[in-house]
Image (cartoon, rainbow, N blue to C red; front, side):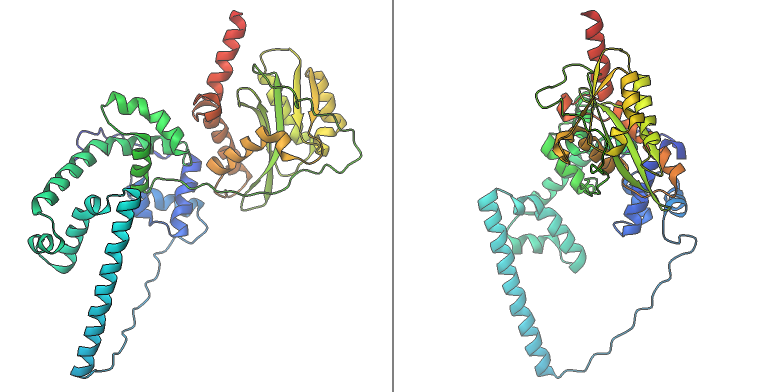
Length: 412
């Protein structure tokens, strides 16, 4: 495989987002890969770049080399020739049974699912066994019932395919620097125009398989913590969104509070999102769930509004949103309050969904302190609004939908 056709781009520490660094550090410390493997998989430049991240952001002590444990030799009892023959005959019978079992399983998979395992992996298995057992390829082909020519032809096709797909890895890694947990469908949507431009034939399902082979697939992570206290004496407002759906930006804003953990303590992230464009309009990270902190997120959203038309503000029945300070700010911002009926997260599903995206795709790893977490949140909101496509928006970004809708309103 040659990579001479791929231009070399020198990178610095600033080219990698904090979220990407934390993702790599977590993978290494969990034992999913070594720091050298992480460097090779993600195309990170510099011999000690990942090691520097581990020393700065990791929870383990990376200032020294890990100690190597000595391997103790086990003593074996001497067996007689008759015992050795009996043992070898037993092992031979076991191997024959295992061989029949594996062949039966492969035949069933090929027949029921069309997996084509024999044809697909026959060259890899033959080459692997040839190296391990020092057996000639001719002998293996004779035993397994296929020709050497088929092995050579398949290896040639695979090598050509790997060369063709080599630029794909670089494209994926480029996006992973900004969105380490972006879903494969969205990733394929962003990269498909580049595939077409470079003449790379790669469908969505084949793209899934490619990422799986390259260890670049991501698995969703789920967590839940209750942050709403709706049992209070303050006035609650009715749910005005039961029979209403927004048809333009800044018509409905939804708010919610979620937690974010650092190694020092638990922090709280207040978000205000446009229900039509899914754009995060305002946010505030704080150590407590105080009303004054939640109001700061609302003030940011109000400051980013372009129209002074009436707007519905929807939230849960948390005491921060019911407080006089928050309700007074809604009135001065020409907004009408709307709230869920009791503690029902599905009535504020959009705000919950935005929380989930940030926590499952961006705020995954634990930062050292609130200062580092503030930087991570700021990066995440910027990438969420301007780069990450949404299935519900026709694979467009929130900024694209927000700006385009406003332009259409001006033309009308």
